[in-house]
Image 1 (cartoon, rainbow, N blue to C red):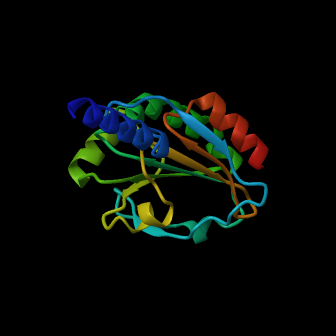
Image 2: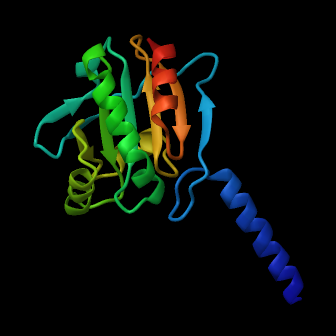
Image 3: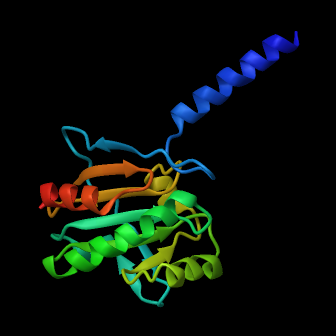
Length: 173
């Protein structure tokens, strides 16, 4: 009887980790996927950034956009923070916009993360979980790249590198 329970638990655990890729505390294996052949339009949202400015997807219509979902408690988010900042600095004069969206976090912890990694692109907290639900985020970090046409061109679950970001942004231009 115990052996059957062990096998069932192991099968359930395996199914769960396959079904929900991305960062869960301690997970660091990145998964990436191309957007569908017929890409989905970006889902509009608004948030207040940590520097108290109103930010919205609509304000950046016609510009490429990088949306990065992260959390201060997420190990892979720490791994990618410097990569995102470096990509932002090298691309900000090209018209590519970046927004960070902190999920399941406190303002204090999220702002501490931003200070620690010296992030200068705008970031805000999804305090209600509404944005997370709209984008079907099951793990962090998750990064969306949106083309000038307002359609999602690329989605990356797990820590992203500057190299991947630049290559996928270039395709989205």
